[in-house]
Image (cartoon, rainbow, N blue to C red; front, top):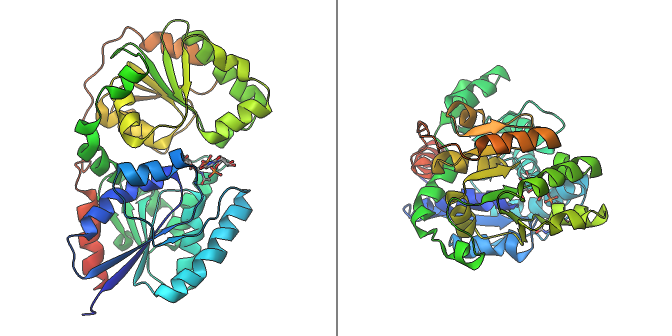
Length: 366
Ligand code: UD1
């Protein structure tokens, strides 16, 4: 047995930070694990990055690659260029990547080109929409991973269909529920007070996906629907930098001026959970929020035609409503006034996912 096992974990974007927080908590229980954290710098604004490190007590990264914004090619290539020397220097026993962002695929490629074992947390998710950059990142990362940690039985089936050896696949549950269950009681009503909102009398909105924000007609249609709805019920809208930039570029800022629409900068994890938990419903195109609402028991209307979180549709919390203005308005008016349903619990989403992952990897690479 070696002295210390080096686990090199690579993160880059907001949802990644939420996923690795419980992993680093778990590492503390193993004296013979030496974790090394690399932040690619894909997300760099304080509200998109540091606020999560502070709020979730994630250790300061050992390396920050400062990759920043750019086209997909530039972002992926820059990450690879800057990560390779770090890996060569550190010689980790394993590289761990999470989710489906550009930093994930870039780090996966670096790992395997250097013949280092690769673990992918949240493997097997599929929207079956190859126009989404995340879908390409998922498929390719899974193809070259040695340990694939999936959230559910159906994600395992997705991988088996793509010819991945079942011995590499482990159903461990959803790591974001570890974070959610730990933090849920800390999510107070403070943010509601600050925004003068009343419990169960407002909706929570997020939009950031490239396919919903990069085309003027689509973004304008969504925002016009939101503006109509906000005449009936207040809507809180923490605006993602991509969405903000595009609203300005398209010259459609006036739609955001609608009276009931409360547009605010991106919020911390705790405030985001606090706002979701007390909302009457949530409108989103985010992946994470689809399953967080499933855990919180809040109805979620997803502004997409497909989802990699099909389990949330089966469990009854989530509905895909697409992005047509008329359909969004209809779906929302449908949900207002309905009683919140009891949502089925999901197997393995029990707050113990990071425990299972670290135990398993420790055993396998020791
Ligand atoms: C990325 C992920 C997406 C994830 C999302 C969460 C990919 C392909 N996409 O999308 O899966 O759901 O993060 O937020 O990796 N920007 C800032 N400040 C920042 C970060 C970004 O201003 O801190 C701006 C940049 O100008 C950039 C734009 O936002 O051009 C988009 O950022 P990028 O990281 O490319 O993708 P996201 O849309 O955030």
